[in-house]
Image (tube, rainbow, N blue to C red):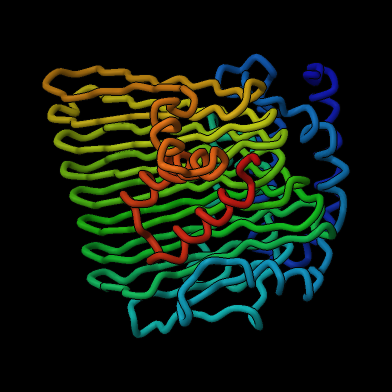
Length: 442
């Protein structure tokens, strides 16, 4: 059931009241008060997305909106160390990789392993930002107070609990993969966190952003990525939260000339998961490669929205997302490529493939392409289907049981994404495979 306009407006008013009561605001330094006030004002002006908004029409926000004020009115609670330790134990990572842990919205230095600054990478938290960095970080937060900003990003900035800032020095070649882990338990009620990654000119680095939870919670997170000229950044987002968690996330990526951005998104959990990824190619020679795999089983709802803006000529983008739907799960994919006026020489490819494993599963897919210039090479497409009967027959004819044969075909379907993108050695692929094996139908 969709929430009425009146109920949505009432929720916005209640959220404004919750902000004024300011539970937990003392955890952040006073210099953030101005950006937080401006972000709240931006959210109140816009409000929650209306039910018929084109970008939200396949995703029902009634439950999130209805419970938002009550969640935001609860002061952040310390996480249960035993629960967080168990969640961290699940994270696929190589021994020795630097790890930053945010538990229930709070930085946990005892659980974190900061990278060595001699490697050319510096990590700091928003709550501990130096005086020299404050203007830069305030400007970052103010981006979510402008007209047209996402309401959830504005809400995130207003109720911000903490953030991670990653600076990669120019010319640095960082071999280790940095892991940023957001973990929460039922005491969290909500987590409002963000990440800023700045890759300096000619640098190379890899970052994996993990989201795990136990129990009922609401995650609202924002990531901003800036790649300077000729930088190379590998970015992975792995979301494997509990069936009682709602997850809303956004990433804003800006690519300068000749920079390379390789990204993979894996949505394996949550009750409702929404991910908005926007990439802007701002300089000639910029290159974006984006891969995604999402699983919607049970009654999960997974919504992926991507947008690539080719704003400079001679830039390339390649995007390939795959979805697996089972039981009463529902997937949504909306991928848009916009080639702006003057972006001659653009090469852009978009592909979405989906697999339905039950008669009650559903997928809504809409690839879009807008071109406002000449001399471009662009293509987009989407397919939806079931397991190949001929392939199943071939495997069963060789003595493979039906259940095993189906598992093999689904794993092969997902593996095509993992094989094209190997961000964290074999640990991540093994984790995704094990998750699929555990949750595939009998």
